Amino acid sequence: MYDGLRPGDPMQENARRRATGKAGSHPYFNLPDFTQPSPPSTPPSLPSHQRCWPSDATKGLLVALLGGGLPAGFVGPFSRMAYQASHLPSLELLIGRCLFHLPIALLLKLRGDPLLGPPDVRGRAFLHALLNVLSIGCAYSAVQVVPAGNAATVRKGSSTVCSALLALCLESQGLSGYDWCGLLGSTLGLIIIVGPGLGTLQEGTTGLYTALGYVLAFLGGLALSLGLLVYRSLHFPSCLPTVAFLFGLVGLMGSVPGLFLLQTPVLPNDPLSWSCVGAVGILALVSFVCVSYAVTKAHPALVCAVLHSEVVVALMLQYYVLYETVAPSDIMGAGVVLGSIAIITAQNLSCEREGQVEE
Image (cartoon, rainbow, N blue to C red; front, side):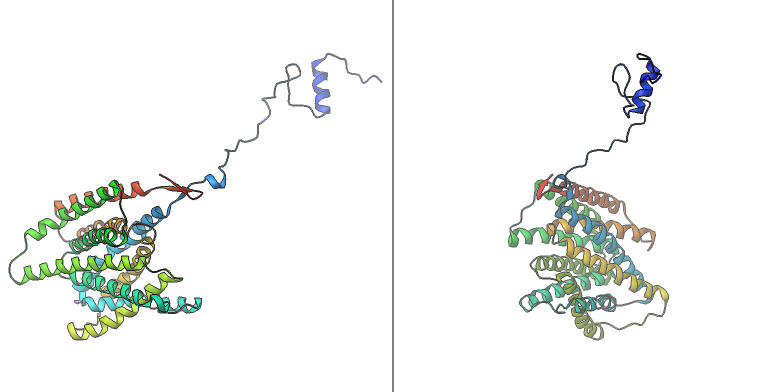
């Protein structure tokens, strides 16, 4: 039957191809029709076993930097503001901080875990809480007689050096050359910050109190490094909330009698003091949890070195909020500390692919 189409006519050939569903190719050279929109191309996705995830050390250092060092930098200046506003004693400030740890008992009760931890590790858990209470008590006492930035500098510097030495002696954990370079650089930055102040101590009672403040800051760093080392030896479910609750419990048991025996209780009557106490409690709790998590993922000396960011934050608040003098050596030392933190963080940045760590 004749369909009215002449063979060899291109227009009729295209019509025939469209009618049979074969449009999209050139009638003579069988080329694709570029006038039709092409489907969007999607980049090939990597298989799940080749995707890059942050390693445990990277996670620990980032948590220590963002959740441990930065909030802790506000604690020292806020403590000093509370002391300047109402002469709030250090032990009373410690009591206020410990009260924020006690509600964690509700979480432990809901989970059905013992409040004091398993019996076999209860002694070490209490030792960890005691060391942290001593560290915080020394730090709060130091910031009342020493500038907040300098007190944080000495405390963090001593904790870094002691953590490195204790880890080498007790855990036989080595560090790479870049890690040692970062540790030495951060320690050098701290020496640059606090060195001129130590060289110009006044004679008499004022100089004695200042020297005592630096000694307390050093002892606080030593107790912090010992506490981190003890925490790394604790392995049981709900370890983190348990030690956080024990910190509040042990802190109250020690600071309440000490407040009435060694210091004079003060009831603040101004909103600034109460605001500082609340801010110190919340920020310190966040820093405590983040540091305790980070030390289980990365080397304790590296965690303490990253926590030197607290010093930089404290120096900034010391200058802009407390209107205390910041010397050029403080700025230079803060720059060295930040450079050292960058070296440590860059060295430990790695990714894991199906259990294999690639630098």
